[in-house]
Length: 397
Image (tube, rainbow, N blue to C red; front, top):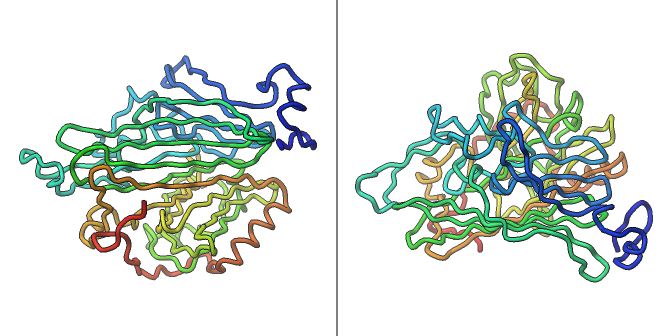
């Protein structure tokens, strides 16, 4: 049953109350018509519970907004949601990605994540190109999808809102990687389910890296908002020499800070008996939170990005396939994922809104039952980068 407005409703009982499901919820395709967003398509999802979010088919089917009952959860940067024709991924020494970086979810990959790097390119089988230069977080996020379907359907007494698309990252003498993406939400529900499969659609063995850049903003992120995760230990911290000087640890958000320099942490996470890793960010003052739930076997690494600079106020929850030290580090340790021709890898993520103090307390209890996170704001990074997938540890399919 779809639980709407305090009443369980099936297709017949809901249909009797309106001429169209769109009165309560559904998926609608619209187009932006002004500024840098001109020509950008949006799939607008409404579940009827207060959960609303929009998906950008022209930007890898990433998420622009996500909100609940009028309270924003996803982050908007000053760049706007730039049309991909304006994107310059190779610009500014590999940092051009930042001029299109905005929204609740930015997908990173498919053959590179993290900072700009130059790596050997023997997998390209092209002697004139011995190395390949990768920009920040890879190329896939600015690739338009072929939208293969969207809409609503009843499965028994359950109504599912959905969208599917195919994103192709390809080049001559290089990678041919397909990202098959499906997004679902239930009518009356407070969660979003994201299912991805990355497939090597070419005929050459190809490197693969993947990360979800989940970006949370005000009012979920505000002074006193808390980061709750089953952190066994902190592995690494960027800019560790100035963490305490800035006075901001990993557990609690400050208000906006003029001149704040970004901080990135890598955590070693424990998982529950089902292999799930829940990470929650909560604002107790307004009774709002979000859980980002992934699988430990799919995303063995986890980053936390803090950019509390005034005007760019955001926290990122970032499940990843590789350690924060990057592409060459993975290759040097034989931890790169190599996809043979036709081989694929699946990823699953669930976003669940926490509405009210009771829901927040339940989520906190669940996280604590898996592992108790460090109780200091500035835990000393261990520097222990656990072995990951490589030639002797095949990526799960």
